[in-house]
Image (tube, rainbow, N blue to C red; front, top):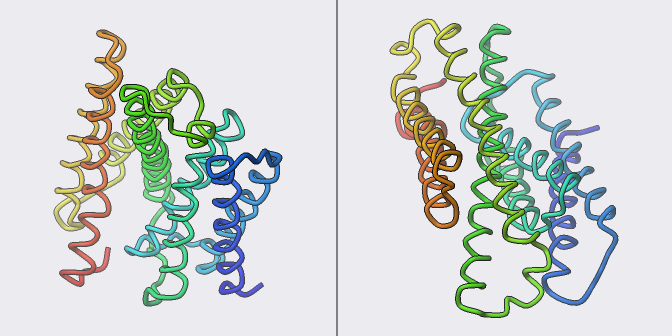
Length: 266
């Protein structure tokens, strides 16, 4: 099946899944949740086949390809989260973003080739991207948590929008579970980097490593504060978003500078 057709199928399915997830927030409609999850699953599978099939299973980590790959992992994580606990608002945010990033990589970005890497580095990269995906979804939940808190604090009726969100305490608990899982994967990423990456300077990885360590410290502080002092609410959300911002700079900020501004290949 042509990659362009798969990309179009994935983009269309993402947009339909977005609409299905948003309908309860827009009007009194109770479509079967399985319909939304089924369409989202089609989008994720088509996206995965598109990403892997474009390079025959190879891993392309150039800027736009990496964005599409991470978007796939975030969309898949969103789908799994919704299977366990309905958070339709996640899909409203994540699915159109995944569609846009896939579209840019498939139809706008210049063609690139997969990176040559051994199994150790490939494992290191996969763990890193999985951790990034989990922490990204937790950051989206943090934004939703802020919206919920503001609606409750100002006593504004958010209408149907709050219906696509679980109760505040459950949103917060889910957010911290994802942060904990992402923190573990980020820890494994840093440790495997020490073991498998041979020359940080030659591969322009020093700044990325330092920023990742800073993000690890921020997330670790957040989890410690949650466990020891019961941190929650705005303090926890702001710290989480700060750590996610640093992690975003560590990966995509450095890739943007190196590849698009300095024209250096990874």
